Image 1 (cartoon, rainbow, N blue to C red):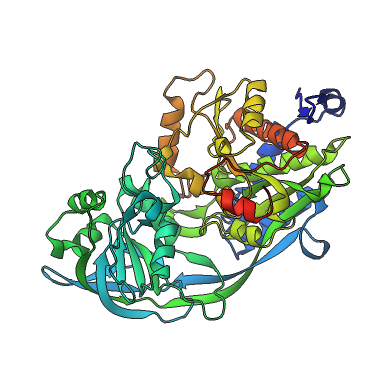
Image 2: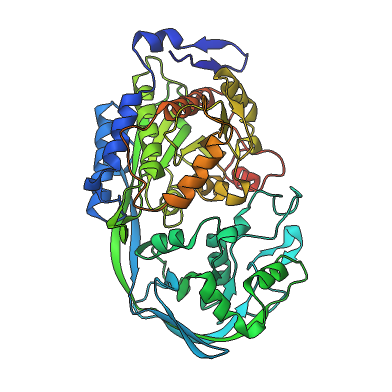
Length: 542
């Protein structure tokens, strides 16, 4: 039986446990399991954006919200917020070539490189000088500049993902990867500097995952936000294998490892690589994708104008490169689990006999796998303004392996909600542990980041690694196995023997945080000095 406690400004406790128990209002293992099973079934064909399976998924989510009494929160009285996208598919005839030590080198699409054009034009040809720019970072707050004043306009930039190693929290976040280390930042910065193309040399340590993940994620259609009039995009943005990268940098006389060591030093200077020629023909189609939005009104006449936000992305990779004869990337863990959890939280919220003070929004976003596009669109076009949104609690990829004694809420400690989150964890006998994989940069890889960028206090819940009744190394081993064998692969499929106890546990924890936040008298914000505080203040929250 759940016990949900609301704290008022005076510290009084409004205990809803009796009312919840009387109506059997508990997170449902069976309902979550059923949602995950359907959303990750072959019928939905991997929930690709702009596909039949994507429409089936969003129709299902909307129907479930309606069936549970959650009101529409989208456009024109519907459950949907339209998200206009361009679907860009790179032709198999795409090529990259350059002159290596042994003569001309031509890289093969999918085998040696993946990526696409961000220019949203069907033909993208270029032949331009290439420059190796280390990690491709310009971070004045850390005294770091990989460009050193070199004009890279019209050039092809080559770099590593990730960022300089650090153990100092004041320098690139210490061991925790910052946004500067993300591939999305690299391409954004290249475009800002006027580059014609940008190429990441993949290594498993710098990326945090193997080439197969890059290939499987980057070899199909790429959903993109439509460019506005006059806006330009890179003619090519993509990745090459480590072996192809070694050929690309051969003129330097250095190995990949040597160049990476150089890139990790503040004294690094850009290195000319010669000329790279690209032929990147693409097919472009218009996609009208959609976020799904449910709404439960708050009970307070004034605070109901404000919102508590729950998010999960519904999309996955659709149909892609076959592996062991299977071409459907079902995305059971990633992220049928998160969608199922938010659906059940919405069910409970709608059934509460006494509603919390603030309104609750349940937003299932599109195109996360393409770079957090759906959540970015919502952040720019919110149902309730960022300055009136108390928190975003995001749910992304949960392992059905049983209950844990610990939990990770990376980012919550950066907000004024931290004491509340700590109390709710303690009430469930959960130890809050630091991010177990700080080098993965998970804070900047999921949809809460889009909401943080517009100022909303935002974070994801993650299971801990200490599983009840399991060995001490079970959690870390399970993560490694999933990352190595199932992440962004067709084998991320539902299994009948999965233990949903931990997923139910995490859904309840998220529900408690949401309920308590919905009744706080003051809108939460970011801690002093945090990178998102200025955006929060700009939204009107002081």
